[in-house]
Image 1: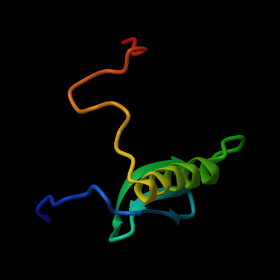
Image 2: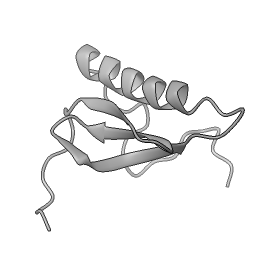
Image 3: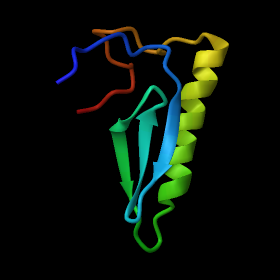
Image 4: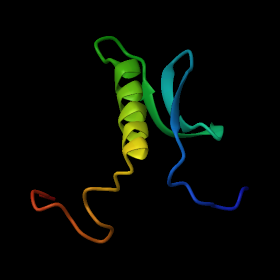
Length: 78
């Protein structure tokens, strides 16, 4: 098992499998972060690509998380 390392600042990519689309770090495509199952009526590819694109765009812009660690957004409802 690999030691956890810094993960911030790593670009995300999308990998297509027969049954799903995976969102992975470009540096480690074998270790997926999110899996979107292919199923009728669910745009799995679009969800995966949107997630990766949005994250990568924020990296390019240097934007951090809109919510600092340890806090909750004002509109959070459990």
